[in-house]
Image 1: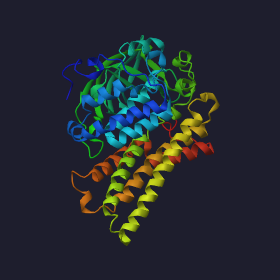
Image 2 (image 1 turned 180 degrees about the vertical axis):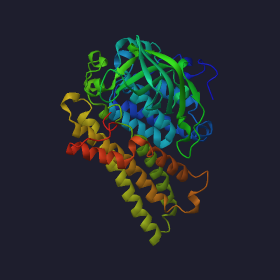
Image 3 (image 1 turned 180 degrees about the horizontal axis):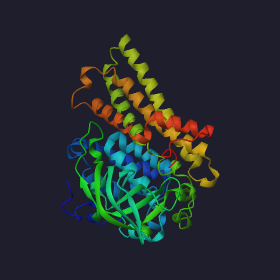
Length: 404
């Protein structure tokens, strides 16, 4: 399915100015206020297979997507700690909305790294939203003034509602020895086609679809060298004074990557707690065992949450040049650990839910599906990331994707 027009989405329709949030507490208050509405639309979200326009408008108007957006362009730049906790709140009510919010919000940090001309073009519309692709096919070819690309990108969450796309692509220059250069490209919505192929068991409403590009041109001014971002010397660092724009991406851009899984797990814990309360008047040995499972699962989620926040607090504003590969590897490891801990906590409890947890109308089965879907992202897969982090610690060469 391709959008019939470019003018019927909240990024174009909204005439109100997004709220600029002044504090963590204000952001959390707004996130909690949205939860009842998001929860009411969960069934519609899954049926649509992308977010309802009302959810998008709520996120835009509330200012919750601007947590990593520079103040210069109307954001609050509150930082990754707020982004993490807002994502958890939203995902506990509507997992798909939490997932898409996380990606849209995180990409505002990456977009702030681009040359100023690209940022000014992007934020000329204050409601601009950008989806992304990091898994792509098709060669990106250097040409005069920029690049040309014919290919595909996969799993572009929230793409139906966006007016821009960011794509991380490898570019091989024949005259340069060594591995391809990783570069981010900024592409307007008019330049690609959306394939309606998001039919999944979990996170059904994220609309994480395939995009197709046919010999499009990307000017040099809309590109960004990945290595410069990782070294804290990207063009945007010279524009924005907040230290988070010169810090490592693993504590900013991907800081909230595991937060949707945590949020869905918190939603599951709340539903399971309600289940325990309904049976607490008749406590038998079986229920006592379930209470123990619940306590351990809740502690596991709390511990993973604390670990995620710890990395953001420690490294999100330290100059990238001062943060070694071992710390970057640790942040990647902990993201995967967080998501897999959320998955394990939920699976441990769902094992006990019995037949009542199998019905389509059961929150338990829906949240179980969504937690497992959120933890299935390749960037959160424990085994290869755990190996990569250990190799990095030991100084052994690892998969080149590990620290990009």
